[in-house]
Image (cartoon, rainbow, N blue to C red):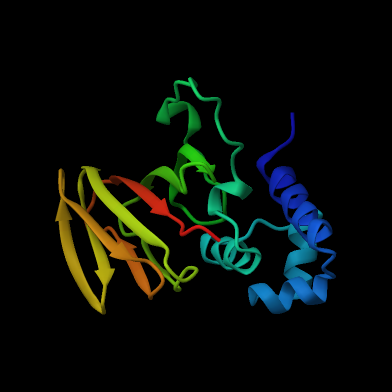
Amino acid sequence: MHSLGDHLGQTLKQLRNDRSWSLDRAAQACGVSKAMLGQIERGESSPTLATLWKIADGFKVSLSAFIAAPPDALDVRHAEQLRQRPTSDDMLVAPLFPFDPQYGFELFELTLPAGYQRLSEPHQAGVTEHVTVIRGVMELLVNGQWQTLREGAAVRFAADRPHGYRNSGGQPAVFHNLIWYPAP
């Protein structure tokens, strides 16, 4: 069984090979240094979530392409079995439904630890996020404004603009994030 770092590296290398891209070309497309891409491919470095998003956007693929294979049609998935730290960030990610082009979305359960904040650069044009708070209280940065979201709150927003997530409280905040990608 391969580690998550091995999977990240193999996926990155496969995407580059599929496109016949050099590390230099990939670095230009992703806005991530050639050295960092090489370290990720070799399993020598664990990227931050922001870096992994840049790579996914640069290759025009979903985030889940780097952390999980698409499930079978009748695959029952349990968040507690899928929860992981796919990057060097403290946020926990459970890829409930990795991206499948047939549906055009991926669904994550995300856990923000107490005091955690992540600012996200814009994703690909047309990408939309749907956030539903499952447990706790979190804040969402949309259109330059932080909005407090409590358990049961749901919001949809254009993720092709800067946005962010934070947990200013003392307990973890858990939410579902459905990310929809427009057809290429």
